[in-house]
Length: 147
Image 1 (cartoon, rainbow, N blue to C red):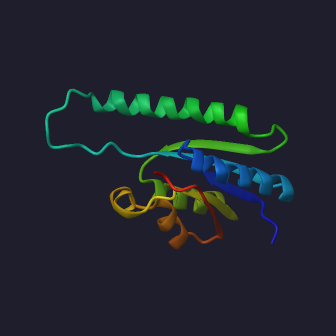
Image 2: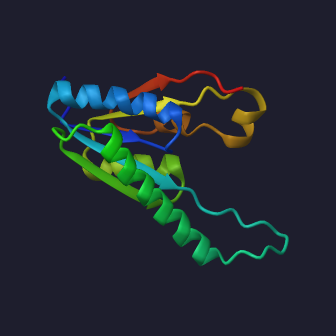
Image 3: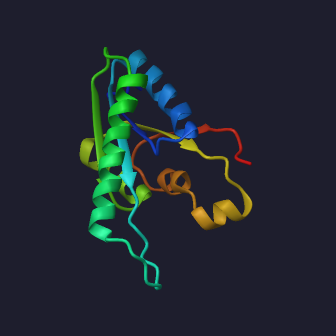
């Protein structure tokens, strides 16, 4: 099956870079478009008073993500590839699935973070949700287990 559009979601972590490297290889092999996606998760409001201006904080988070995406493209993506990079706001798993459907993505290459036990319970598994929902193949790349 030739892939024309490959999606590599990233959270700018080392495990996501393992998956990105595989996505780059596949994009080069299939002469496919490479789509990079970072999802800025919503700020969970806590019920205690905090001196944080939420709109300002959210704007700073988005700007930081856009800078990180630009650095990622400059440092890790060959210029020979056709690349589309997006930073969006929302639930990571939902936004990855929405992007896949909107852009007609043929393959998602995503990292597993190697979390187990309480960390997986607390943080959930974006990868697990993505594997269960898309309408295209999903290649999961196992990352070393976190300590």
